[in-house]
Image (cartoon, rainbow, N blue to C red; front, side, top):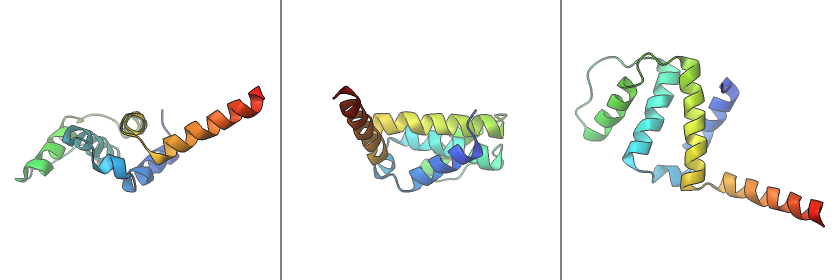
Length: 107
């Protein structure tokens, strides 16, 4: 189960993640839905007229009944998977550090 701190770190990462902004609409809708479920609970009201906003709203509606904790965990996991899939400077930096550790340990 992801902690609130892990969730908040993932949210902050997404706000500045350039590769994530270019993601497919389904990816954006899923991340929106998990974020909204974790922060606002079940969706209420009618879907917006705008097609993009409507898709995000419908993805959120599909999360109905998911607890805050489960939505937070799912969001963190989803973002971590997308970092690997779509790329991120943070992940690249982690790989470099691990490679450097391996070189130092292996030398």
